[in-house]
Amino acid sequence: MTDVTCDPEADAVHVRIGQGQIAKTQEAGPFIYDFDAEGRILGSEILSAKHVLAPGDWLAAPVPKAPRSDAAE
Image (cartoon, rainbow, N blue to C red; front, side, top):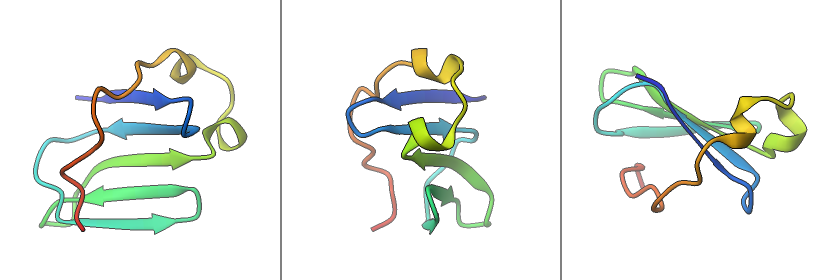
């Protein structure tokens, strides 16, 4: 399962690649990774997407419906 959303106002793309509860979030440069309790990557957010990613289908991805509330605090 892969779910891609693009927030043009925030210039961010979120790619959800797994299901589960987010236990940890780690930032590495323009990338933010969401991990479950076993350390598996559930998703990744790419900040400054227009500068980091080549133009592609991600530009037509839907805008997220609601702010992510499952991120670890």
